[in-house]
Amino acid sequence: MTRLLVILILWLMLPILVESVVYHHINNTLLEKKKKFIEHLNQEEINDFIENPDDTTETFAEFSTLHSEFLVLSRVPIKPHQKKSTFTNEYRKIENEESEYRILQHHFTYEGVDYQLEIGSSLSEVNDLTFVIRLFIIIVFVVILFITFLADTFFIEYLLKPFYKIIDTKIRRVNEPETFDHTPIKAASRDFRELDFVLNQMMDRIAEVFKKEKQFISNVSHELLTPIALLKNKLENLLQNESLDDNAVDKIAGSLKTLDMLKKIINNLLLISRIDNNQYELNEAINLREIISDLQEDLQDRIEDKEIHFQNKMENNFVFTGNKTLIHILIYNLVTNAIKYNKPQGKIIVEDGFADHHYFISVKDSGIGMDESQLEKIFSRFARISSDQEGQGLGLAIAKSIASFHHIEITVESELGKGTSFKLWFQNHN
Image (cartoon, rainbow, N blue to C red; front, top):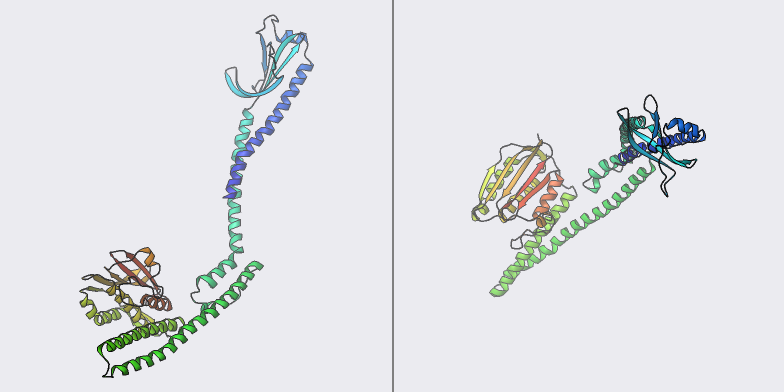
């Protein structure tokens, strides 16, 4: 854009500059001719020019054969404060041929009589020259623009090749700090080498912090299970005491329920931690159609309790390699989520297909739906769509971790009051 702007400015300014130079040259030529005419002027010549000296309206004119120049001498009274010499551009008709001229008008007095001398030079050649210059300039500038654009494109691409390699191999493809490639990028530029070095250092620090965080969550979650098991065992033993009244039994039962919920949260956090730490193997052949059929059978009671119409529209026997237990949990969480937030007598549609050479599974419900603010945080841990529903807000977080572990992309579309659709996109299909 800058180059185009410069070319446009030059294209507009150069003809003006050329005209200025040409006009300056013509003006000097006209002044020289005026000077020679005045120097050799005498009354006899004036009488020769003007046949009737007493007729103040009489003028004399002469012009070249090609009408490129003319000279006019007239008796014209000099007005007060009138400039002695002026230059103008005017159209003059000579022998029925009209042309534009650069005209010098010079007023002088000779032997008490006022005269006006006009010497004109045709501008047709100047206009033609200006047009040719404009055309030449634009052709040259277009060629220059094209050549420099190609040169700059290839040069910048060559110059920034290490930068794009850094972006591609060390940032865009890195989903986990452990997968970061520390291999130095070969670059002629010291700046890119420094950028690569700093990125390596930064990712080392991030990986260390990330590892400590996951280890901390794993250790804390694991250690919490022991005291929870002990508390649960003691509370269950207390329930065997026949001396307890009903109020005490209810409180103990409520405490046991709270411990069970806490245990479930910890187990979910442990599951996420193990997934993030790559503690599962991806070596099982998984038929997704079979998993959906098994889930429909397992959740049939919950579906019937809410009078939901479940439609299994799976048509493809898609098989891929992964961890069957984790994939089962992933789809289970999506389907139970669709049941939990659905409306009575609502619908759940599970279907599959191919789009853009990628296989997908869609879990769609006719539930309460979500707005944009809810969509932004649905995969966050402990985030719940509705406070009225039971749950810890870890189901979709687990689903997201399992999907990332299997390189599956999750997309979600939702409309408040109309329902939600989750799609699982698989990278490769067999």
